[in-house]
Length: 68
Ligand SMILES: [Zn+2]
Image (cartoon, rainbow, N blue to C red; front, side, top):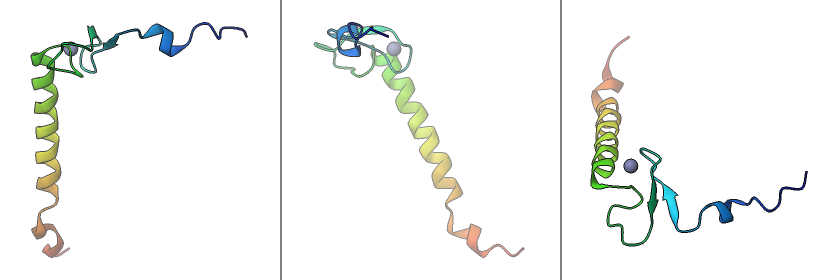
């Protein structure tokens, strides 16, 4: 196999795929990076907040005092 010419660094010049919608977005002059837009950024932050809330809810001190 001689495909050394197709390296990842060559495939990604100055753009990157949005981790939310995979839209290729320029890295420079982008206040919402690593996302393509503020919408994707808010969606991702919302997902993180929701997941954090679920984890916190499961770690309540009351769970260790519940009798079997
Ligand atoms: Zn996006």
